[in-house]
Length: 201
Ligand code: HEC
Image (cartoon, rainbow, N blue to C red; front, top):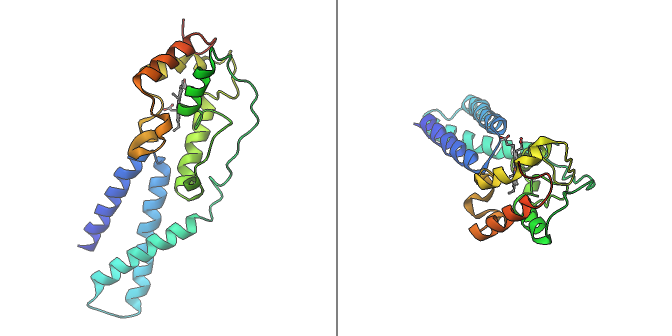
């Protein structure tokens, strides 16, 4: 009974984590830590007595494990540094509006001008944000524009196909500024086509 409750909670956490873009390793680490913590705390609690209240003890152990894991992961250094390296080179944006729309929809992961929300200080959200930013920057960084890198030419295609910004970024009402209207997308694509190095052909 309690173990199926635990499995259900893990499944809900899994589904939610995937929908908001939590990296798979973080999901695995957290589920393993909570499961291990529950097992360990429950063993100690059972040794202390109180037979016949195993269900309640297990639930209490699980709750204690969630709270302890949440506290302990705040000590992990990963994700704490909200770095923004210097801006080296941007594309020669066709219009100021092209840049504005790119800032709204893309600079949160593909620039050295990332605006970190206050909740990005709290693990595991901080881990999620750090992984999106480091992966995003490593693919294309519009603050380190390099016309020789082919990936930049995929900018228009990434937007037109609806691939970028990723669905998880704007889900559940987050980052409303990045949710561009059809008209804004059309304006952006037109601007990007007129900006050297951001489209194919
Ligand atoms: C939430 C963070 C995030 C936002 C916001 C975001 N991206 Fe990305 N982007 C990523 C990640 C992560 C990848 C790598 C995905 C992969 O390879 O599966 C990526 C990949 C890309 C690539 C592919 C590069 C290559 O490998 O060829 C392009 C181009 C791109 N993004 C452009 C954009 C544009 C344009 C926007 C804004 C409209 C945008 N992205 C918004 C995170 C983001």
